Amino acid sequence: MIQKRILSGMRPTGLLHLGNLHGALGNWVELQESGKYDCFYFVADWHAITSEYSSTECIKDNTLNMLIDWLAAGLDPKKSTLFVQSAVKEHAELFLLLSMITPLAWLQRNPTYKEMQAELTSRDLSTFGFLGYPVLQAADIIMYKAYGVPVGVDQLPHIELTREIARRFNFLYKEVFPVPEPLLTSVPKLLGTDGRKMSKSYDNSIYLSDRGKELHRKVASMFTDPQRMRKKDPGNPDICNVFTFHGIYSPAETVAEINQACRVAGIGCIECKKMLASRIEESLAPVHERMDYYQNHLQEIHDIIADGNGRAAKIARQTMEEVREAIKI
Ligand code: TRP
Ligand code: SF4
Image (cartoon, rainbow, N blue to C red; front, side, top):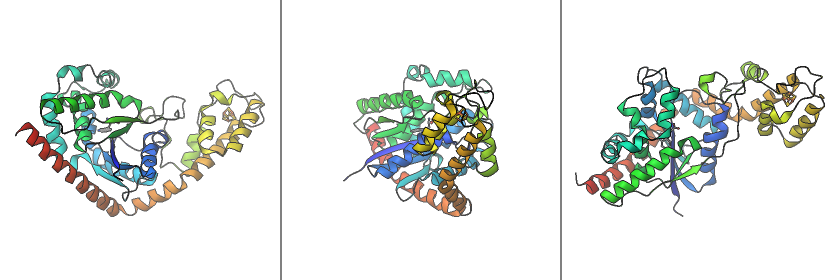
């Protein structure tokens, strides 16, 4: 059976948190384990420069750390191709060629462009590269003739643009590119310790790498049912983030017990959180084991990436030959 190729990428912006693990990354591992797809996953380090151009010194370390997180989470270089965008220079060539055929209006009306610019006010994002972000993303995707792109809803506008760019190329020159489909990741809503969206920039994240005292400290600081001031007040698990986490990390009986006990003040939040921290730690044990292994075998990561970069580059070179022939250049 020929497996359909799928491809996805992440910007190396720092340590991955539990929101990432139960969202995009977990989905990547599942797709890999399904055996149905030829999976390509890459670190979008050039994309990181679009917003971090004035302080690029962390990108390399973040790339390595993200690869460690990926391997720890269960991405398996024997099953998936893991590579780094900047190692496959063909992405830059395809980006350039696609930029020639992409109407400015498509980029200017891109909702993520407007949102990011409004959000990241601390940086000047009125650059050519930032506007062209989705063109580079389109190059990443169609380079590998990916059939599907596993992403969260926030990336849908970029996939739609990729589809339009692929169609335009095919129409202007030659049918080189399949038009890729988004493979939507449904993400359980894991909020940060302060009840807002879990995000590095809010300093409310529980990281994949958190364990022991640090993990217990963070879980102990989690917001709960705001109406529950004292232990003798009954609580409402339906509006408690700690309870949502139990839903993921604890066995069904425990979840049912907490659900009942909380409502009649039969369990206190401190105890409930201690249980949760232990469950998270238990469930992350294999992740931490792999993390320790790779941290002590960094050379192995370099070998894995060299191999993945090579596999990716081979396809990229073939695609670029077809592209140059289609454009007659
Ligand atoms: N824009 C994506 C994000 O911020 C990262 C990305 C870059 C990507 N190139 C890609 C995702 C290609 C999927 C396919 O999450
Ligand atoms: Fe939340 Fe648990 Fe406290 Fe109930 S007992 S409010 S579920 S932390």
